[in-house]
Length: 202
Image (cartoon, helix red, strand yellow):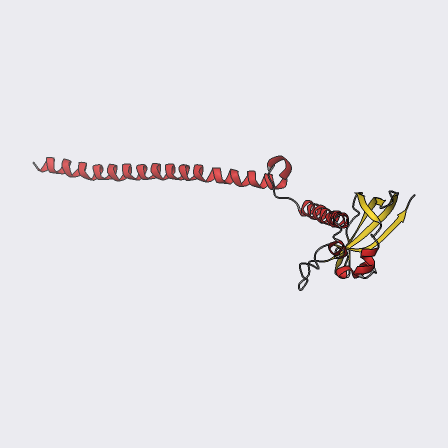
């Protein structure tokens, strides 16, 4: 009986040892799996970061819908400004053909003062004109000076008088607008005719 107790007591510590050992191995195995899984979970975002970094380094090949560069934005802005200036010239001649001389006069800077004529003088200047057709050339570059922007626009003009005569003119208009500075009004930031250099060619 006592021998059985001794054998039994010898077996129990060994079983407990094996149980602890098995538990430790199982814990290590599970930890290893968790680390492996964690590493797998980490790897994919890490690759994404590299992909994004590569896309930033090579925006044209990797990011076809990338944000415009500062230079392309500036080019687009310049083109928009040129179109707006051209539209002023078109409006000017459309107003003249409609006999809306007041509107045409106000296309000049300073509410018409830049034309160097009073409104009545300006209006009388078209008394013999039946129609005016304008062809607009390629706008020049936009230059800045003293808080203002300037652009020169070449034109060719065909005018028909009341007696049927056709006259041809060629030259350019310089338009001006105030830069986008604090305190400037919406009207000041619009293009207006600043000066004209028009000559008759026949």
